[in-house]
Image (cartoon, rainbow, N blue to C red; front, top):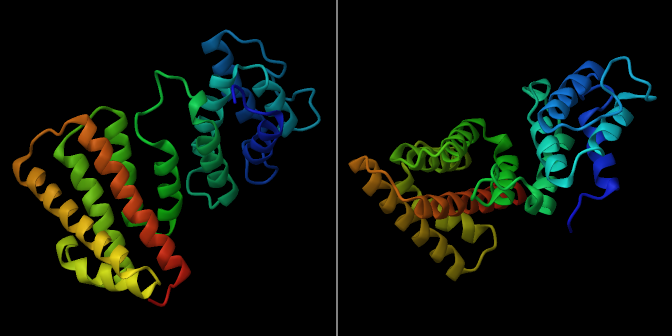
Amino acid sequence: MSHIPLPFLSFAADILADTSRGLSGNEVVKAFNAYAVEHNVNIPHSTYPFEAQNKRTALLDNLKCFPPSLQFKIIRELCDHRTFINKQYDELKSLKVKLVSQFAHLAPKDEFSKLNETLTEETRHWLDGFPNALELYLQAIHKYKHGVFSRNLLDDLRLSLELLLKSIFKNDKSLENQLSNVGRFVSDAGSSKEFSNMLSKLIDYYAKYQNTYIKHDDAVVEEEIEFVFEISSSFMRHIIRLHAKSPSL
Protein backbone atom coordinates (compact mmCIF):
# COMPACT_ATOMS: atom_id res chain seq x y z
CA MET A 1 0.00 0.00 0.00
CA SER A 2 1.46 3.35 -1.07
CA HIS A 3 -0.53 5.50 1.34
CA ILE A 4 -2.07 5.51 4.81
CA PRO A 5 -5.86 5.10 4.44
CA LEU A 6 -8.11 7.83 5.76
CA PRO A 7 -9.72 5.56 8.40
CA PHE A 8 -6.28 4.97 9.93
CA LEU A 9 -5.45 8.70 9.87
CA SER A 10 -8.77 9.39 11.60
CA PHE A 11 -8.07 6.63 14.12
CA ALA A 12 -4.67 8.18 14.86
CA ALA A 13 -6.15 11.67 15.22
CA ASP A 14 -8.78 10.45 17.69
CA ILE A 15 -6.06 8.96 19.90
CA LEU A 16 -3.45 11.72 19.58
CA ALA A 17 -6.00 14.48 20.25
CA ASP A 18 -8.21 12.60 22.70
CA THR A 19 -10.34 14.98 24.76
CA SER A 20 -8.87 14.10 28.16
CA ARG A 21 -5.59 12.30 27.44
CA GLY A 22 -4.40 13.72 24.13
CA LEU A 23 -2.57 16.80 22.88
CA SER A 24 -4.14 20.17 23.61
CA GLY A 25 -5.35 22.43 20.81
CA ASN A 26 -2.31 24.66 21.27
CA GLU A 27 0.02 21.66 21.12
CA VAL A 28 -1.59 20.45 17.89
CA VAL A 29 -1.09 23.86 16.27
CA LYS A 30 2.47 24.25 17.52
CA ALA A 31 3.53 20.79 16.35
CA PHE A 32 1.97 21.11 12.89
CA ASN A 33 3.28 24.62 12.34
CA ALA A 34 6.78 23.24 12.89
CA TYR A 35 6.20 20.42 10.39
CA ALA A 36 4.61 22.83 7.89
CA VAL A 37 7.56 25.22 8.01
CA GLU A 38 10.14 22.41 7.84
CA HIS A 39 8.54 20.77 4.80
CA ASN A 40 6.97 23.83 3.12
CA VAL A 41 3.40 22.56 3.40
CA ASN A 42 0.28 24.72 3.77
CA ILE A 43 -2.07 23.61 6.55
CA PRO A 44 -5.65 24.78 7.25
CA HIS A 45 -5.29 25.14 11.02
CA SER A 46 -2.21 27.17 11.94
CA THR A 47 -3.67 29.25 14.77
CA TYR A 48 -5.62 28.50 17.94
CA PRO A 49 -8.54 28.73 18.50
CA PHE A 50 -9.13 27.11 15.10
CA GLU A 51 -12.24 26.96 12.94
CA ALA A 52 -12.51 23.17 13.18
CA GLN A 53 -15.21 21.84 15.47
CA ASN A 54 -12.64 20.14 17.72
CA LYS A 55 -8.92 19.42 18.03
CA ARG A 56 -9.26 15.90 16.62
CA THR A 57 -10.71 17.28 13.40
CA ALA A 58 -8.03 19.99 13.25
CA LEU A 59 -5.27 17.43 13.67
CA LEU A 60 -6.75 15.21 10.95
CA ASP A 61 -7.23 18.13 8.52
CA ASN A 62 -3.61 19.19 9.00
CA LEU A 63 -2.29 15.65 8.76
CA LYS A 64 -4.04 15.06 5.41
CA CYS A 65 -1.98 17.87 3.85
CA PHE A 66 1.26 15.89 4.11
CA PRO A 67 2.49 13.08 1.85
CA PRO A 68 2.34 9.50 3.22
CA SER A 69 5.99 9.32 4.32
CA LEU A 70 5.60 12.49 6.38
CA GLN A 71 2.26 11.32 7.77
CA PHE A 72 4.10 8.26 9.06
CA LYS A 73 6.86 10.42 10.56
CA ILE A 74 4.40 12.85 12.17
CA ILE A 75 2.21 10.17 13.75
CA ARG A 76 5.23 8.28 15.04
CA GLU A 77 6.82 11.40 16.53
CA LEU A 78 3.57 12.65 18.06
CA CYS A 79 3.19 9.27 19.78
CA ASP A 80 6.41 10.18 21.63
CA HIS A 81 5.33 13.75 22.43
CA ARG A 82 6.28 14.96 25.91
CA THR A 83 2.57 15.24 26.75
CA PHE A 84 2.37 11.46 26.91
CA ILE A 85 5.41 10.91 29.12
CA ASN A 86 4.43 9.11 32.34
CA LYS A 87 0.85 8.63 31.12
CA GLN A 88 -0.76 5.21 31.11
CA TYR A 89 -2.33 5.33 27.67
CA ASP A 90 -2.67 1.86 26.17
CA GLU A 91 -4.43 3.08 23.03
CA LEU A 92 -1.43 5.25 22.18
CA LYS A 93 0.97 2.33 22.50
CA SER A 94 -1.32 0.23 20.35
CA LEU A 95 -1.43 3.00 17.73
CA LYS A 96 2.34 3.08 17.43
CA VAL A 97 2.57 -0.70 17.08
CA LYS A 98 -0.15 -0.68 14.39
CA LEU A 99 1.54 2.19 12.56
CA VAL A 100 4.92 0.48 12.39
CA SER A 101 3.58 -2.99 11.66
CA GLN A 102 1.32 -1.82 8.80
CA PHE A 103 3.15 1.15 7.28
CA ALA A 104 6.86 0.88 8.09
CA HIS A 105 7.57 0.79 4.34
CA LEU A 106 6.39 4.42 4.16
CA ALA A 107 8.95 5.70 6.66
CA PRO A 108 11.39 8.31 5.30
CA LYS A 109 14.37 6.31 4.10
CA ASP A 110 16.93 8.57 5.73
CA GLU A 111 15.30 8.24 9.14
CA PHE A 112 14.20 4.63 9.41
CA SER A 113 16.52 2.33 11.30
CA LYS A 114 17.66 -0.93 9.77
CA LEU A 115 16.28 -2.62 12.85
CA ASN A 116 13.06 -4.56 12.53
CA GLU A 117 11.01 -1.74 13.99
CA THR A 118 7.83 -3.79 14.14
CA LEU A 119 9.60 -6.27 16.40
CA THR A 120 11.18 -3.61 18.61
CA GLU A 121 7.90 -1.71 19.03
CA GLU A 122 6.07 -4.88 19.99
CA THR A 123 8.84 -5.77 22.43
CA ARG A 124 8.63 -2.32 24.02
CA HIS A 125 4.91 -2.89 24.43
CA TRP A 126 5.39 -6.31 26.07
CA LEU A 127 8.13 -4.95 28.37
CA ASP A 128 5.84 -2.25 29.71
CA GLY A 129 5.17 -4.29 32.86
CA PHE A 130 8.90 -4.71 33.50
CA PRO A 131 10.23 -1.13 33.82
CA ASN A 132 13.83 -1.98 34.70
CA ALA A 133 14.22 -4.27 31.70
CA LEU A 134 12.38 -1.75 29.50
CA GLU A 135 14.71 1.10 30.48
CA LEU A 136 17.79 -0.83 29.34
CA TYR A 137 16.06 -1.96 26.16
CA LEU A 138 15.23 1.65 25.28
CA GLN A 139 18.84 2.66 25.96
CA ALA A 140 20.00 0.00 23.51
CA ILE A 141 17.58 1.27 20.85
CA HIS A 142 18.82 4.84 21.37
CA LYS A 143 22.45 3.78 20.99
CA TYR A 144 21.73 1.76 17.87
CA LYS A 145 19.86 4.58 16.16
CA HIS A 146 22.75 6.94 16.91
CA GLY A 147 25.33 4.58 15.46
CA VAL A 148 26.89 3.44 18.74
CA PHE A 149 27.79 -0.14 17.81
CA SER A 150 29.76 -1.02 20.93
CA ARG A 151 29.84 -3.64 23.64
CA ASN A 152 27.83 -1.23 25.84
CA LEU A 153 24.88 -1.68 23.52
CA LEU A 154 25.23 -5.46 23.79
CA ASP A 155 25.49 -5.12 27.56
CA ASP A 156 22.21 -3.19 27.67
CA LEU A 157 20.46 -5.97 25.74
CA ARG A 158 21.94 -8.71 27.89
CA LEU A 159 21.04 -6.94 31.14
CA SER A 160 17.54 -6.21 29.88
CA LEU A 161 16.96 -9.93 29.27
CA GLU A 162 18.63 -10.81 32.56
CA LEU A 163 16.44 -8.40 34.55
CA LEU A 164 13.34 -9.72 32.83
CA LEU A 165 14.18 -13.30 33.82
CA LYS A 166 14.99 -12.24 37.40
CA SER A 167 11.60 -10.55 37.64
CA ILE A 168 9.67 -13.50 36.21
CA PHE A 169 11.55 -16.18 38.17
CA LYS A 170 11.79 -14.03 41.31
CA ASN A 171 15.48 -14.69 41.88
CA ASP A 172 18.79 -12.86 41.47
CA LYS A 173 20.63 -15.26 39.16
CA SER A 174 22.85 -14.26 36.25
CA LEU A 175 21.75 -15.06 32.72
CA GLU A 176 24.02 -18.12 32.51
CA ASN A 177 22.47 -19.54 35.66
CA GLN A 178 18.89 -19.17 34.44
CA LEU A 179 19.13 -21.77 31.67
CA SER A 180 17.50 -24.60 33.63
CA ASN A 181 14.76 -22.22 34.83
CA VAL A 182 14.10 -21.12 31.25
CA GLY A 183 13.83 -24.70 30.00
CA ARG A 184 11.51 -25.74 32.81
CA PHE A 185 9.38 -22.59 32.48
CA VAL A 186 8.92 -22.99 28.73
CA SER A 187 8.15 -26.69 29.09
CA ASP A 188 5.64 -26.09 31.91
CA ALA A 189 3.94 -23.46 29.74
CA GLY A 190 3.09 -26.17 27.23
CA SER A 191 5.95 -25.95 24.73
CA SER A 192 7.43 -29.11 23.26
CA LYS A 193 10.55 -30.66 24.77
CA GLU A 194 12.43 -29.93 21.55
CA PHE A 195 11.48 -26.25 21.61
CA SER A 196 12.35 -25.93 25.31
CA ASN A 197 15.78 -27.44 24.67
CA MET A 198 16.34 -25.26 21.61
CA LEU A 199 15.46 -22.05 23.45
CA SER A 200 17.74 -22.93 26.38
CA LYS A 201 20.64 -23.68 24.02
CA LEU A 202 20.09 -20.48 22.06
CA ILE A 203 20.19 -18.42 25.25
CA ASP A 204 23.32 -20.32 26.31
CA TYR A 205 25.08 -19.43 23.04
CA TYR A 206 23.72 -15.90 23.30
CA ALA A 207 25.25 -15.48 26.78
CA LYS A 208 28.62 -16.83 25.60
CA TYR A 209 28.65 -14.47 22.62
CA GLN A 210 27.82 -11.53 24.86
CA ASN A 211 30.55 -12.44 27.34
CA THR A 212 33.17 -12.44 24.59
CA TYR A 213 32.49 -8.82 23.68
CA ILE A 214 31.81 -7.58 27.20
CA LYS A 215 35.22 -8.82 28.36
CA HIS A 216 37.12 -7.34 25.41
CA ASP A 217 35.37 -3.97 24.91
CA ASP A 218 35.43 -4.42 21.15
CA ALA A 219 33.25 -2.59 18.67
CA VAL A 220 30.83 -4.97 17.00
CA VAL A 221 29.92 -5.00 13.32
CA GLU A 222 26.51 -3.54 12.57
CA GLU A 223 25.14 -6.69 10.96
CA GLU A 224 25.81 -8.69 14.13
CA ILE A 225 24.25 -6.00 16.32
CA GLU A 226 21.10 -6.09 14.21
CA PHE A 227 20.84 -9.87 14.58
CA VAL A 228 21.55 -9.80 18.34
CA PHE A 229 18.98 -7.03 18.78
CA GLU A 230 16.30 -9.01 17.01
CA ILE A 231 17.03 -12.31 18.74
CA SER A 232 17.07 -10.51 22.13
CA SER A 233 13.69 -9.00 21.29
CA SER A 234 12.31 -12.38 20.22
CA PHE A 235 13.53 -14.03 23.44
CA MET A 236 11.90 -11.40 25.63
CA ARG A 237 8.66 -11.16 23.72
CA HIS A 238 8.11 -14.93 23.73
CA ILE A 239 8.97 -15.32 27.42
CA ILE A 240 6.62 -12.48 28.42
CA ARG A 241 3.82 -13.96 26.32
CA LEU A 242 4.20 -17.31 28.06
CA HIS A 243 4.28 -15.57 31.44
CA ALA A 244 1.12 -13.61 30.59
CA LYS A 245 -0.67 -16.85 29.71
CA SER A 246 0.52 -18.68 32.84
CA PRO A 247 1.50 -16.06 35.48
CA SER A 248 1.61 -18.70 38.23
CA LEU A 249 4.54 -20.55 36.62
